Image 1 (cartoon, rainbow, N blue to C red):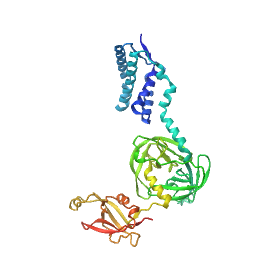
Image 2: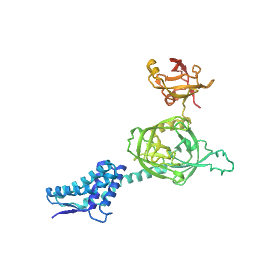
Image 3: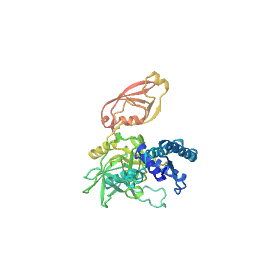
Image 4: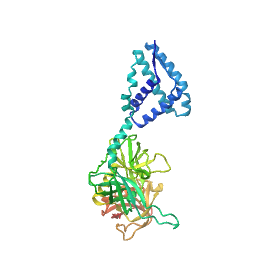
Length: 439
């Protein structure tokens, strides 16, 4: 007498093995959906039975399992020709694991169908990803703000062209019960009127507290009570592949939720001021115009980034300013209204240094900054600098590009006499400068 396992048994067990092997993550569910489609194809769109005949004794069970696997290899041959070897190997190994497990259990005794067909037990396991997103959305959505921005209309080159709508939309999130809201600089910069709407329908007039275009972050203030808030997480503890959930108002559709994973860490993104944001998170959680300024949160509902940009021609390339950088900038904006940065009063460009200079002058960088012009009588004490000088070192730190100089010219450099080294007339020269404050 033989025991017969139905396709549904193999299907359910395969799902369990997928989650056990890869965890309850988005890639695991993608592989599972891929596997389900293949199994449906093999059994004629789910109408036929694909049976695994398992003997009572272990020898018969192993032989039967081998026969089924050989038969399955033939049916899966077209998959190897259409898909990459990795996908084929993953599907094949998991199906084989399912049959081997059933074969061993069948050889030991009568199968326990309730173990594989108990929907009440399988639902929380297979739907853990959905439950996580639902839980985070409920926790966070009350703190997300829809911003309606009014700005002066852009000048029109053609007067007959229809007047542009002066309103724009964006997103933000409340970080304190007294009404401080974090958003993007490009959302509120130059705004003449800001209207903030909460999920419960309440609307408030908002005003800008601080704006930092160099990191594309801003803080606005609303006057309301009983405000829900959301806290910052630690972006330095993020891992690539971790769940990332974006909440915002794309194209004016309020409180839209998209989910994905952290695709990469430590990206750089150039802002409208020309400076680079160093600590940027890349995610495949879909962002669209209107999502800007909304929170990117982890599976615990903590903000890990502030959504800031999307590369429109590409798919799945979205970026957020990391929470650790955002916390520092937001604190400065609330206390001082701005982030102070140093300024040398020069225009310059990045160049590559000749190989002979690297050897003869023993330079620690292959690039430098060639000064094109010097601002006279500016806020910076730069009288010793000349056009044509090539800046290679500032206070002992190598300067290989303009981005390197921007990083050095922080708040602590303002008004502090500093040593820098330049290449002038083929030799190194030490100069004194005093950075001013960038206005």
